[in-house]
Image 1 (tube, rainbow over the protein chains, first blue to last red):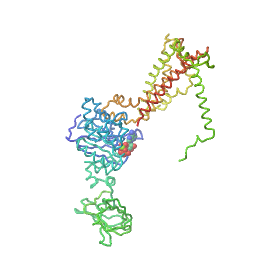
Image 2: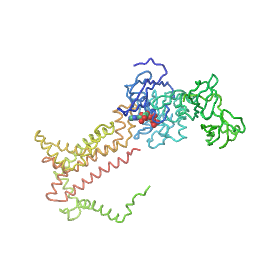
Image 3: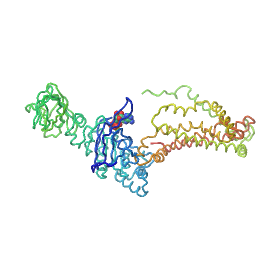
Image 4: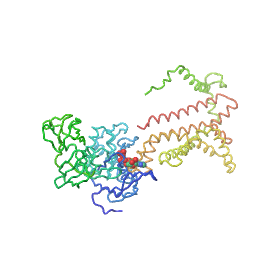
Length: 370
Length: 268
Ligand SMILES: Nc1ncnc2c1ncn2[C@@H]1O[C@H](COP(=O)(O)OP(=O)(O)OP(=O)(O)O)[C@@H](O)[C@H]1O
Ligand SMILES: [Mg+2]
């Protein structure tokens, strides 16, 4: 079946639902999900454990069949195509390298199964070895190389047959921090170099933000928001996304009034707070003011007149490039986290117990229904 | 964590260990030594010679019994290993079904049935079939041996399958291998040491069997063990010892094969 498809769409999920089990033990892993993933895109599925990320990948890879809905690859319905006939390859979470083959044989396996001529396979394997910088390990067994190298073999093996789409399931989570950072950059540049659509699964929001062209945030089998990392971080669509992607402060209150330039919210236990935002609030509506820790400014109260909020410093933790302050707002109503870059010229020293004024930087706060 | 119980430090451990080894190996050693006896008694030493090996090698009955034994062991080991491989794959590569536990126990249950019981049962069945069909060839022995060798072949194959990562097969499928190719290029090579071990165990088990063979065979179908049993009942000469020595050598060599292959092809 041909779709009247938009050119540029690599994978289209149409109302896809997947349930496991039967009777009263049914688990809905994916709930009528509709999603377009474009050609040449680095697309990330981000969400907490058990939200259905792996299930979505397995549906696209063909290892599971949707309970309802259709999956299109380049406009073609692939529901009835078994995995070994889909031009989609996977980098498995545990790599799944063949232990009885050498690195080179692993990389050439897909092409061998496609019955490509021997010399073509050899040439392609060499090319892939160069791409992932493992030329000198081609004759090693996969058990004789390090975790990072195994990761690269898995990547080369999946890329060798030039799939239309590459699926990566938490591929970096087994690596240590330094190597993970390195591989993130490497994956990103590989994706750019090959022009293959990458669908990457992770529960690490930082990883998702740094690597992706677009991110889909999932919760309990449903897509909460799809957008660029910037959109997802700056303009979270709902409470879940705001909370899951990056650290956030929530101040609950009721709307007093709002106009084009801002809104006034009666924050519980704090009182009326005016913020600059385009979001509209109905009087009496229960809302959350959402603001990132780095978008709050703090200054010692002694030096400054009281700002939007005041509070006292409960904890200070040094995190290298920045310092994080936990502030209990006056009258003990709420606790917020504030982050300041450690640039020596700017910052006035602030210590535990200090009274501070807390200000929103302009246009940094957002209002979401509570 | 508590320290392991220091069994080697217990009083008398050494004595018990040594006595056990003596009881296990001394009779075997004596039997082997007397294979080289120049005299005619398996109990009175008459000097060194290889005459009983020579005599066994020239004994037409020994030769035909040996050929039958090897033929029977080879055929039934191939059959039982094939069946065991299929059973092991079915048990570990299909989702749990109703009666899974029953099937699992049924496959290894024959190990627990006293051999004499199986033998009597098979005697009744084969006798009946012989009566119906008039056929009295090697087929009955082949079937009987295949049947009791299946669990021996099954255990090492299943053990190997359990250490194998099922995602490897999935990865093969992902990389354009049809189910058959995934089996041929990934499952089979990884499973091979288990299959070989299963085959050798089945082979040795069949080679060694007395009870079932004795009940199922017809006249002229002596295997080496039943021939030896017959000889021992009559006059006992060191020829039996010589046969036993060769027999032992073959068994040990085969089992060593399993060990070597396992060492060479450890997964990881
Ligand atoms: N084969 C299965 N049978 C029954 N339930 C399953 C099966 N696979 C997954 N589930 C359930 O479906 C839901 C989604 O699982 P999935 O593996 O897709 O989560 P995930 O987002 O990949 O989680 P993680 O980050 O922990 O890997 C979970 O509630 C899980 O328990
Ligand atoms: Mg998962």
